[in-house]
Amino acid sequence: MSDVTEIIEKQIKKYGKKRETLMPVLQSIVEKKHYLTEDSMLEVAKNLEISAAEVYGTASFYSFLDIKERGEFVIRICKSITCDMKGKNEIIKALENKLKIKFGETTPDKKFSLLLTNCIGWCDKSPAMLINDEVYTELTPQKAVKIIQDYYKK
Amino acid sequence: MAKSLKKIDIIFIPDSECPYKVLENSIKKNKEDIIQNLIDSGLRGRGGAGFPTGLKWKFGAKAKGDEKYIICNADEGEPGTFKDRKILSEVPRKVFSGMGICAYVTGATKGFVYLRREYKYMVPALEKEIKIFNKKAIELGLNFNIEIFLGSGAYVCGEETALIESMEGKRGEPRNKPPFPIQNGYLGKPTIVNNVETFVSSMMVCKMGAQKYSKLGTQDQHGSKLFSISGDTPKPGVYELELGLNVADFVEEFGDGDTKAVQVGGVAGFCIPRKKFAEQIIGQGPTTGGATMLFNSSRSMYHVLQNYLEFFVEESCGQCTPCRVGTQQLLKGIEAVKNGNKAPAYLDELVKLSETMKISSKCGLGQSVANSFASIVENFREEMIY
Image 1: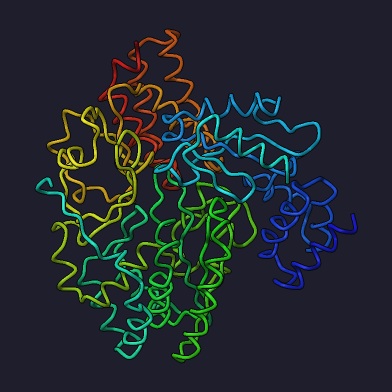
Image 2 (image 1 turned 60 degrees about the vertical axis):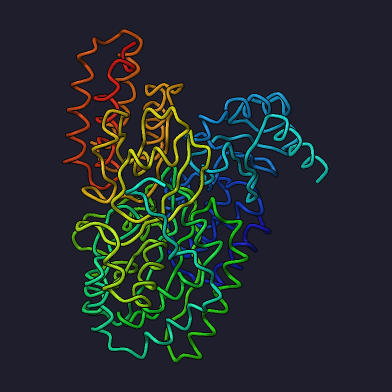
């Protein structure tokens, strides 16, 4: 718990102990711990002096504030219309095969989570995906698998 | 090049002309003159809703408050839109310059760029540029600085009051309007929210003058607009086009020779079938955020609509019933008709439901579902059934 407290305190120091600090705090925990546990949300509530229900309410609203267990690298394949037309299903299949999980799941070694997401703003270079903050565009199944292989080395 | 389609180069002309010069010149001018110039230009918000920018700034200047905020809405989440990504990557100084002029005119002292989470990769480059701007503002004696606020992934936060809620650390649920953010925005203070492109266009209006700018476009919508073009096109990308272009000319320029439908304004916009290409003018009637997707005859419009509805179901904030339940019922409804569990006439009931959503939903998300829903169901009815 202590390292979560440290993250929270750092953000509070930067932005102040106020409700507007909630989002940066949650983002910062997700960045370092990959997702928000119930304990970490309680810790945030205590430190910001707001109710745990409000912290959970905010966290559960946003798709990048994960409240389910996630791996070190979160893959988000765009499923919106242009990426769909340009073959997102083949990308999903290729990565499901490569990682041996279904979308929505996390690998047993907690290295990867495979998710689908709504438009990420790369329709001109679709199909596209995000891995954490990095953008990968004009994917083919081969290219996507190669990208994952490179992540295994990280 | 087709007749009504005119490519223009205002927004992306190289940054080297030093947009902070425009800022410097502007803050020596009379504030009322800048606002009047903007009103005369006819510029309307470029995010999609199309509110007159000059008027918004005028209200912002008049609003009473010990503190005022400016928010640059970079929560570009409309499927098919990616122009703001290009602006922020290539000409960020023009955006900040526009924000600076807005700050001078309205008396705001703090600015935020609300950047969608999907664009987090941009943060280091943008922060570097913001540092330069903030330094420049001090040099110019302008009491205004900018910082980035990163979103966390929610389409509805593109709606300005949902965006503000989100900045306040809450769920991104739109507020009742009025009061509008211009009176009661971020932390209850007067807040001017404009789209990324709107700030650039405002700055260009200051540079060019209203007369020259308003000559572009139609009687209804002046100036040029960025179009994010994708789908079945050999040349996807961002193009700056003069408003008032005919869809047939658009298809001739950007289509693949087999275009059967064009979606104008993203999934919240309208789907135009081939038979109506000639009569439709972009830049008359509804304003658009510029997301334009082309579909060729290999595409199932049922599948397209299903994809849109799945999007709306996921992105509805769930606060108001017409949108929360309506989006789900529309999706279930078209699936039931397709499976034969409902008679084709059920589609008419669904269109009525979408119209009810238009008048009863709280924000633009629920209100706009009917646009694509009715235009696809009515124009591609066969594909919905068989």
